[in-house]
Image (cartoon, rainbow, N blue to C red):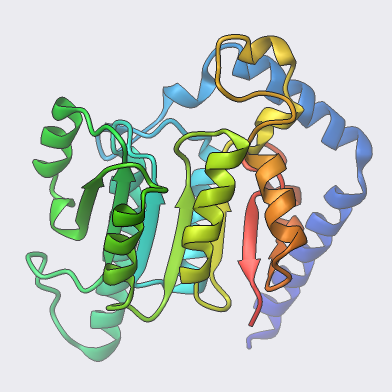
Length: 260
């Protein structure tokens, strides 16, 4: 590797290591997270015209991970407006173009090699129509049904068997038991070296007043589910460097890397 590139990468690694040690900046980040959550900050962003409902920092992390892992399938639970499906489909399309360019081939947009599968218990008709009309639609498969229902899991597993490198994103019902059931169902599909990203683990770190009308809250949320899951699954580990790199994230402790 070029010496200048190596030096730059070493500098970045040093920056991230410094952020991991800086308790003050971490505390400031948590305060900022708390205050912007009151304003539904995540609602402010879209991807290729569809609302995303994610933080830009996590969007940046996703594109880095997709390039690093080079998945040919991304499984998502939780669709909402479809922005995340569109984003991940576009990132996979870029991988297809990169592969084709390296081989001197031409990509046929009508026949994408990589795919995103989205699962939601209730895909609203107006969202389905907008997603199906989007230019990235040919890379997307949507499944309506509970993400933890046996028939839904069976459908997703059947699709996953057709692909060699799989990434998973969990962002549906945020209760402990639901997320834990999703982890047990879908984390085994993650290929070694790839990731299972559990979103909205920040619920555990927010004021309880935020969740007075929610099914989830302090002590009952994605982060508590991740903790229980990891206690029985040492093939996964939290990638702490990602949280330190971002500082602002909806998924603290939720970027799970499968060893290997």
